[in-house]
Length: 196
Image (tube, rainbow, N blue to C red):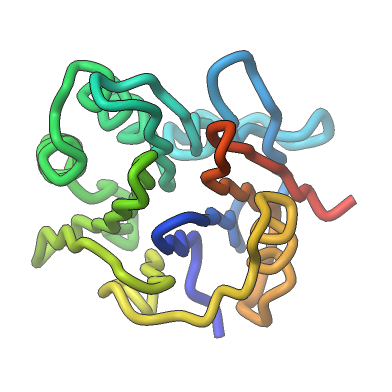
């Protein structure tokens, strides 16, 4: 099954995977304050605005650290609103609504999730027909296609590296790269799986 890009989030651990038929030559790189999806060195040039973006950021909020992750440029305004003191629910809802679903041939939904340092986790999506933001008590998945409403999902990982590897290895078609994040006693840890 091809579900496109997806996030999985639980109270302490989360992951994001790029699955792509159109732009498979991508990888995730670690920057100072974000994990960024972008083309590999051998990727053909494209002017598609949805190919490169920050997919995961950990930010300092008035109540502690929060991780925000998702499938596009909306991750940055979510992170910025969190830094400014917005509750995670409002940061997700306002940013998803403002940027709306992607105006491509498929009306691709935008998906995102947050994990707070208190263990509160939320998941959200904006589709052509709906905006959904939910608090999650157990690992939950939302994808751009086929599974575009949040649903319970069995994520076993307990580390960032395990989360990235686990979602990368799922049988959903056309895996490209993945990122994992976990809340620890010392803050958030992140990991990358580029399928090398």
